[in-house]
View 1 (spheres, each protein chain N blue to C red):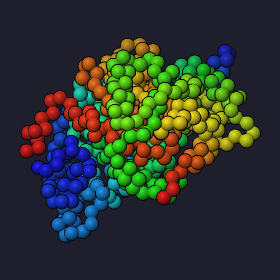
View 2 (spheres, helix red, strand yellow; view 1 turned 30 degrees about the vertical axis):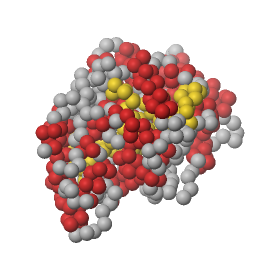
View 3 (spheres, each protein chain N blue to C red; view 1 turned 60 degrees about the horizontal axis):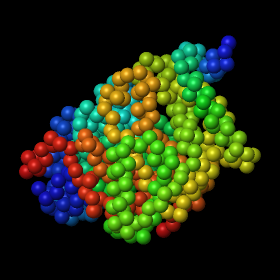
View 4 (cartoon, each protein chain N blue to C red; view 1 turned 90 degrees about the vertical axis):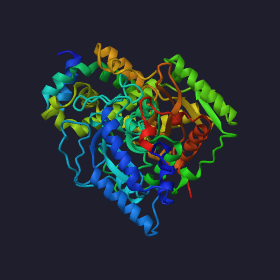
Length: 477
Length: 66
């Protein structure tokens, strides 16, 4: 086989287009891996083999007939179980929506379809996208492919699992407080939380429309760039979207970081930081310096205030959507999940509107103080090593809340600010689990952020590491 | 009735669920703390000319052009 799933979206699409392999062959491998290792790590909800193979054969037939192919033609993927496809159950990780069949298809899925991607099925997620660890009381925990005793990150848990274990080269996730970046960080892959409004939310289960973002997870930044180019842009079904010029991200991947200025915020982002995370970030900054970039320390504003605002907006919007179910069937929510929504019932409407009114000024303040004169900011995605499942479920509610609070410490504020952020591997802990950094930029700076991530990956190759016990050699022959 | 119990009652009453109010009384420390933080920030940053569309306005300043 000329290209393997772990080689990524761009490599696979090229190999299929050149006739070096077929979409059907690659898709069969993906389906087999989803069935075996995807299920082993509890990353899979539904596998649609016949549908996927039919799509794959259509692509192969189109290529044989000399027809033009899309940017993702024949590449198998699977996605978080909250992207609606007409007639296919989208349970959203919940008991309440276990049999829900939507009557529309998400714009994000439609755009992948139009680009020729093959949809293999749906992936594990936290209940209603409300856990940063992959916790799901109804479906069981997602397991980390690097060590199944550890959490895999959520709420796009299956997306992280499926990409890290090379079941598929890319998957869609959604991010309201870090739900693309957590599984990317914990599973050792690359994920993009775009600028709010860059990608249509239409047909994706809403949690908090003001904060929700749709974005890709993949092994390589260049794959993330291609997917974002396909996904981004105006959609009449989501009037918050903006019609950015097309094809900006992949075209921006020059491989160079020379002359770029990077801000490394201290203060809040340097506090409560595990030593090995700090060391990995130091090493990443050294790599960027070798690439010709410069790093400057900056000081963030009051992040406690921003985190409070994020919590208020998220819980109010989620409580609005869930109120009737909270009244009629509260027992069908996991206690941990219900507890994240219910506070939204209590806040006065004046606080909510104030939170929206302050979003612009506080985002401007963050950009000015954290990024300043630089092009972007670099900070840890997680301040701690990937926790164990036991650390996030056992013990007193206060202990569990403290660990979960640390998991989201560096991510949730970015959603209130609405800024784009790329999470990518920057090292490994002593126990062999991934460590991740996030590169955060000004609104609409996805091309620059992905250029920086791609330049880093061209010289470090950390993103190419595979979890232990995956016998790819045997499967690729 | 204590202040905290009143908060839970009012929220539950307005949301048509006194059971919710009773159950969610456990959230009152978080709600009261967050409310205080946001109100204090709003005292400094929100005025007659503030808009809930403030973020959309900021984003538009950075929009790329082809």
